[in-house]
Length: 465
Image (cartoon, rainbow, N blue to C red; front, side, top):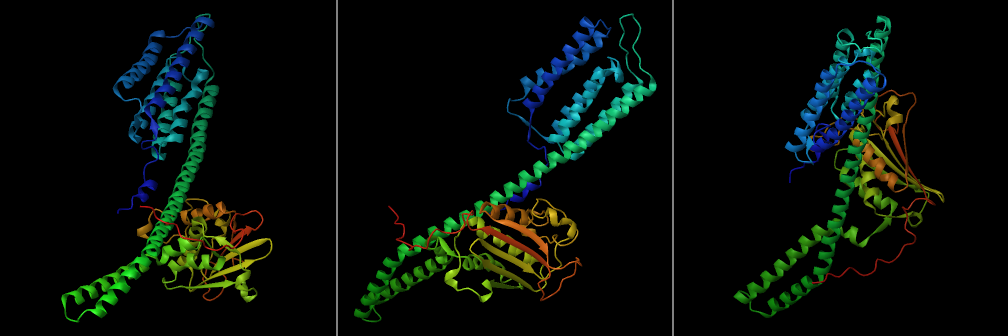
């Protein structure tokens, strides 16, 4: 099956996200505001406007909205280019209307920022830059060329050039600042949304594997007895039949095939058997399970339980939750990726806390990123840049540690990331616990990690035909 998950993190930001109906609704509000402003200026304050050109500007927006209403379906979602052109039209229309109603002297000139803000929120960086540039250029044009508003005495309304230049500069700075600020906030929200989606995908994948393993183990267990009966009966039949006859050969074939079925079910259910029959396990067993996929990668993984000071029966017995296993597995994978020779996993517990500490002898974390580790989409120039083409959607994007942190925090854990040496050198020290350190701590009173008591496994679930 082709892995399509990477496409979720490579698509354009605006592709299919902006509804045409949303932009049309915003345009109707803008049209209503423009008509109201023209009416108040003309009828209430008595200022003179070129109503013909104003009608052209507003009427053009009305026509475009009506055409889109009848041409496109109500649920249409616009592609990036379509949304860009829509906002570009709004920018040009608003600039034209400002140009025929006093230009920079119009107090509503600040509204030229509206399309830029929408673009920064919903569109790509390139589209936002195009619309911002268009807004600044058009604003500069209407400073020089515009039709002035006619005052009550019939005299055009002007402001000093220095004041007009100040207004222009203020609006340009506002466009740039609001565009950058809105884009930054929107980008962080988008990144967090994608990262949470990746965490949900990882947890769903782990849960599916757990459920599948349980089903396979149940099938292996339930079929074990009838297969054993078939093997026993076929062996007795073969012993009573004369060798070399067709009946004897058939009986031996039945026995061989029954043995083959037993071996197949045993291999299929080896991993799933634990998921079905051991819903709870010692913490060291869960850590061992998390580390198992990475033991054949050429690096040594050493698991230390209580540093020999406690008996195995004193270990916490925890639920084998997918969040716990997958989160620890991601942390161990991260350590194996960047260690020089060895990864140490230390397991400690007291009456109040359960602690798992993962240490490697690699270069450690860059100090300027220590406070941001666990955030999604961190780009670094050093430690965390190895890229695996088979997992392109995770490697190099900062999602591995984010997923691990998110999943483990769901179990009530608190994660701390530090370096084993101070000051930071960026050099690996093979055989020394001087690289990156991840400490995972669970308060035993508050977390829901441990089982209440160790109970018998009980009977297996029966399948109903």
